[in-house]
Length: 265
Image (cartoon, rainbow, N blue to C red; front, top):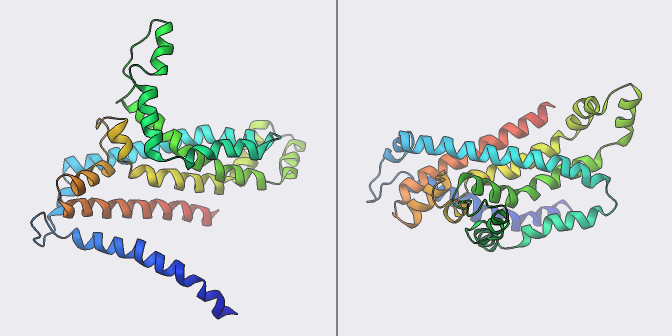
């Protein structure tokens, strides 16, 4: 029986090897070569130059900001969903946009945020248009939050659903206010869902590049943008691979910190 069970793991193991481990090894290999194919460590030295290092810090800043905004919106939304009658319907409405192609959603926002879009048309009624909303930091954060927020809501909603209501009632019976009950009971017991949501948003936010191109108009430059530039434009696969390695390490560390925090609790 155990052999049969292990046999089912073979397809996943093959997929993991071919599409995760082998690509990372290839990226690591190419990171030691320059654009002319000469073996070098210069790609890693260049990463710590002011240009790339500030780009890395900017990537972390934007990823953290997107994650915080998603969390601030998602937690009360998830809490509200647990109190509604038609939970499944509301969840479906939240999930549906994530089934749509990312490129289509991005182009839709170009029309919405554009000079002749509906937002500027609405502002024009009050004499506030036209406003340059597109190609700004604000538009980049707005679209990124819209794309990632379902991945923050779902794990928090799941954690809130599993929360034993009698624990909250006990807190109220002991004289706790709503804020104290939330701070001492609800939030600590749903922290696992919060950490899962943070992972699901922060990690992909580090490597965004298409939104920075189409929505931010290259005014927001991140590591994801630089990697795409090196691979597709300058053909400097070595530098692009070195940046990708640092990105993989950063993602791994963020997962380790959140998982470690979960185990400590």
